Length: 243
Image 1: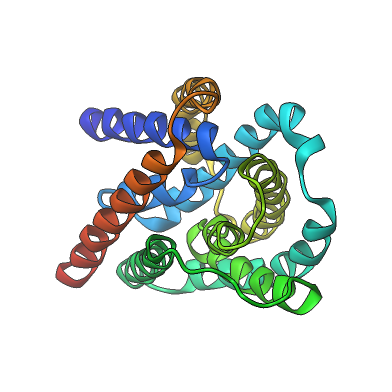
Image 2 (image 1 turned 90 degrees about the horizontal axis):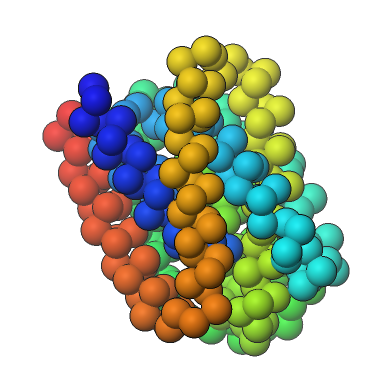
C-alpha cells in the first residue's frame, strides 16, 4: 500500500512537471500510469480535482494569452458530452474502462507523434466537433485535453497561446466533470484524502515545469511525453486483457 502511494506521488510529480511546461498531459500521464494499480473509477475523479487545482495555480499567469474565441467554439460541445463519458465510467467494468482509456491514449498519442496537420478552416463546425469528442474522453478517462491538444498542435497556433488556451479549457471541462461525478457519488472521504495527499507533489511539479518552460527544448519534451504515453497505454491494455 505504501509503495503504491509513493509510486502515485512520483507519477503525479512528473506529470505536474509536464503540465507546467506544456499546459496539458497531466491527466493522461497519471491515468495511464495509475490505472495499472488502481481502478479507473478511483483515479479519474482524483485527477479531475487535481487538474482544477492546477488550473487555478496557472490561470493568473496565462489567462491573458488564451484564445477566447476558439474556446467559445470548443467548450459548449465538451460540456454537453462530458456527462455521457462519466456515465460510461460508472456503468462499465474497471477492465473495460481501462482498455478504453488505453486505446484512446494510444491513438491520440500516435496522432500527435505522426505530425498530422489540420488542413481545413478553423470555425464552429471543426472546433465544435473536437469539443464534442473531447467531452466523451474527459468524462470516461479524464483525457479530454488530449484531443484538443492534438488538434491545436496541428494548427499554426503559437505554443504560448496553446499553453494558455489549454489551461482555461481544462479548468472549464473539469468543473463540468466535477458536477456530473458528484451526482453519481464518485467522491468519498478516501478519495478526498488521496486528492489532498497528491496536491503537494503536483504543485511542486507544476512550479518546476513552469520554470523549465522558459528554457527547456519543448520539442524534445513533447517527444518524450508522447513516447511515455504510448508505452503506458500498451501496458494498460495488456493489464485489462489479462485481468
